[in-house]
Image 1: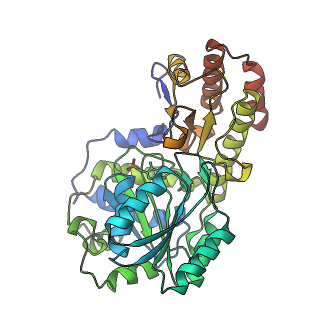
Image 2: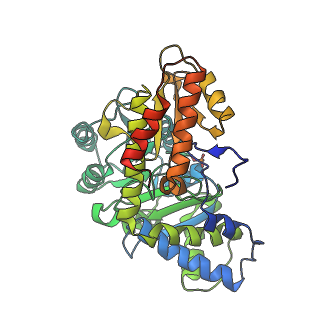
Length: 395
Ligand SMILES: *Cc1c(COP(=O)(O)O)cnc(C)c1O
């Protein structure tokens, strides 16, 4: 990352590591190229490791963004008339609700006020109630809602779904590879993300891992196959072939990004997944201390709900969205608000992937935010904020 460029601290796309950047800087290979075949096969196996997924699960790498990853889950698993329980924690849950309804599902939502998340007990009650009226096809939730910075605990939800014979589907687009998720241990059925968030790649890949029960549900579909590009059965033989180190063709893979994916996943796995989760937790904890010193209150209403991948921060009294431009003038790009109920009242700082190991970049971010608050007339102690960050250690 060159110093003349603004530091990109939004909840995706993210800053790339030097190794990923280098992998992106080679001419894209053909889809039959031996290097691509090797990288593709290796990346698929590494996805299972990053997802902590069972050997029987199927990873899918499809050109597209996170919304495509969501659509891949919905299109394959949800049929008209299916009863689905959606844990709604913000804007991306709303997007999921839209997709589920377009797929013909009868969607029951469990909600909470903005910045909060329903307790597992409330989800259990709703699931029992829904189950009373007939089988429930799926329980769907967003691991980290990027509009509010709220993180749910997927583990009890995955278990509840399993107990009720329902599939559990988690949107991990702002979480996968940064927030703890143990697909095999929790018996979760689908966990999906996109390349430009905590995976640490440029945008362009939809990444989905489907467990055995989800694959069987697709195979047992009564409503006819989903659109060909979305159909897991179109892609599955391709994924199998590459994992066996044979090239195959259904639709052109994003070959350059697949090379980078293998490098990025290798970096993620280098220290082990627990280390990876701990790195994000440490960086987020240090940033939270700095925000506290700067009087920036989080949108999540309880500490346990605060994601480790981004901070959603309310503007202090007398400061508005102009702050974002002043932060940019100081060399750091942060994001505005997204949730309509909070619009204009908060901003978001992404901290996932490469930057969590770069104390200097986290410091630069805190200095830019503190300086911009000062420019806006707030009485802030930038040195104390940086000291709080350093105490907990960016790295
Ligand atoms: C970013 C995001 C999406 C959408 O991903 P795109 O790549 O923008 O389509 C979906 N869900 C969550 C939780 C996200 O953070």
